[in-house]
Length: 151
Image 1: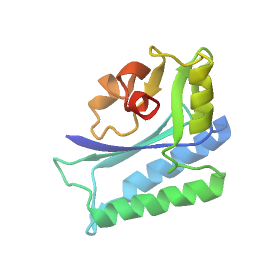
Image 2: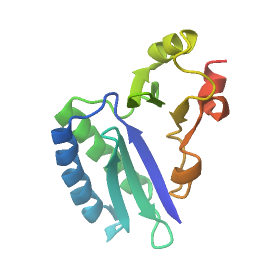
Image 3: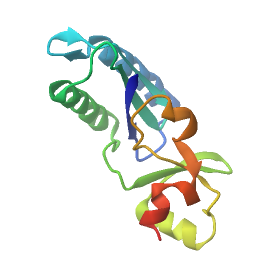
Image 4: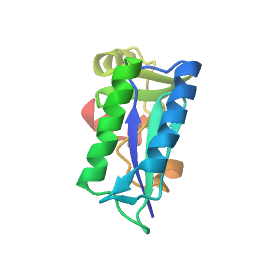
């Protein structure tokens, strides 16, 4: 089973930034190790917003040290590209023009204005397994943890 970690940027990356980050993600995944042994890992950038790290736990599970190394790598991405990847109060949702990201107060304003409603699709970056990407990552606001936060 593939374990995943999703990190969301606080802004949509430019096409050029996205291309550069994809190269860096690939290089990181190739050398990512647990206790000196390579992990069966991959990494991808989706929608120029989400970094998804994957590890096949049937081969080897990521440990504290290997997770720490991924965090150090991602902190380097933050610094290099002037982006925040660890701010869990940034919310991504599907708007008429595509995927959008907004901070908590902006999300509240959009809710109050009716631009985000119970049927708006939001991204749940707390999922932990690859199979959830298809059925639990993008869900209607009314079925999300976001709904409880803004109740």
